Image (cartoon, rainbow, N blue to C red; front, side, top):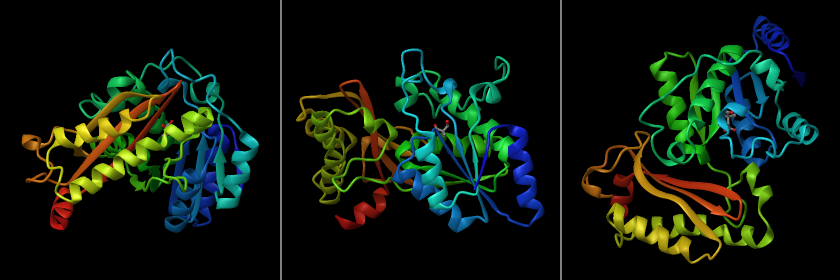
Amino acid sequence: MRVVRTVEQLREALDYMRMGGHTPIGFVPTMGYLHEGHASLIRKAGEMSRTVVMSIFVNPLQFGPSEDFSSYPRDERRDLELAEREGADIVFIPAVEEMYPQPIRTRITVDSLTAQLCGASRPGHFDGVTTVVSKLFNMVQPDYAFFGLKDAQQVAVLRRMVSDLNMNVEIIACPIVREADGLALSSRNVYLGSEERTQALVLSRALREARKAIEAGAVQTVDQARGLLISVISSSPLAVIDYVEILSFPGLGALDGGSLLSGAEGEVIMALAVKFGRTRLIDNNVFIPKEVHALV
Ligand code: PAF
């Protein structure tokens, strides 16, 4: 595995792989502090590509002024061990000055899809994500790029960017990886105190209960599903809800007539963002209403 820190070294390493015929190139962009969710992305990239590139870069552009950029967890040595163990070939770890050598005057904005959910709670966040991912795509020029569905809005936004701008890369969305007790893996879980960690299980439980109620036909509208999610989450005294939304996926629009079961095209997302102490966690469940309807 090669570790490179400049764009020039990255391009040299990639030229070498391309000249040796080690294509397609799979790319896993991350902000480090890697966990089993990232490991699953590297493994998927390894199944679909002959060269796996991972980037580790905590991107200042996607953090708001009162967010956790400076305290975001970092552990390069552990990250490199995990990347090597899971089969990454090239790891790109640029400094902020390498990615942003001059004040950035060009930004990528995907509108409409970024107006709700995390886009509403974190103004400017998705411009930071789409801008850095475009830069990384230009540097790596991957055939495939791998993202976890825990950040489902990010997947929807990046797919739209790639399609609108004719970028020559396929976005591969990979399933959410959870702890055995249901907590969705996140680098930010490390912030949770032990009582917060226990109470945070309410998120996956709420999603499971809502799915069960929808499958049983007991819940048929967006309002009923939201009501159920909110009441389960509110049973945890430490939970402070940022949003609980049910929208079409990947369009992230309101469902026709507020009905979960009638005529919704494609998929539906139940998306949650909830704070436990100073830690904001997100979780979601994406399902196809017609398939759920068939179960009723
Ligand atoms: O999902 C993340 O870790 C980040 O948003 C990404 C895609 C690496 C961009 O900084």
